[in-house]
Length: 263
Image (tube, rainbow, N blue to C red; front, side, top):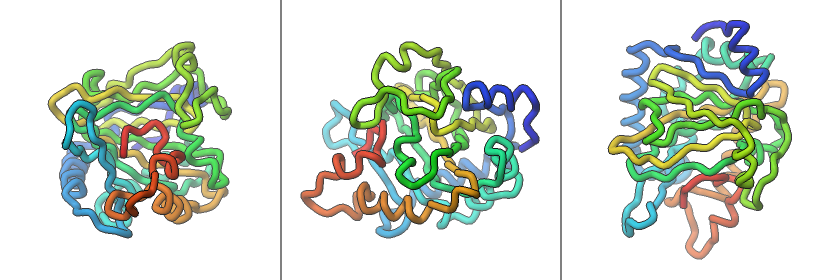
């Protein structure tokens, strides 16, 4: 992880995202792959990490692991990597000040996994009193158009809510009127994007997973909202092992399931 150069900072200011290539070394990548397999095997545990699933259309009875959130408190290796001074110093360059962790998740996007609709992340976060977040995306597997890589807009980093549906997803003509680029990132790369940057991803039509970490941070001056965020999410959109029968979590947890294909 290195100091950003002038061209990278200019790309960030203009577009609200930047793609850094070859940041992580092979040893770190080997650790990251091993750790990803470890947390994927963790059992359902109420009150701890949060496992979410999707059930692909046209495949009755099929249940795919789609996401695990809130894993850093329970994994020393990942906490050490993503909470390292080098990582936090890199993110502070984009933010303009020190940052604190807001949330952590890994999307697995297994073969047959659905895509994520056009959206901004900000609508899911603004209720917590913070209007500036940035997310560090760390691929475990190579991103391809076939497996549903990140697709993100150019010249659309203004901090405004773009026209959207009641569920928070963007209206169709928003992305249609923007230049959207696929980011064919490799393991070892890092992508950082602002919560206001419009983005999406497609379904995984390949035979292998497209796993990627997402670590979301906010400026330290805005306070530490991680505990409040997860307390509210656990109340409104808990993992399956914590759900009560008869509750409509799709409606109750709409804010926390923005553009996601999860149950």
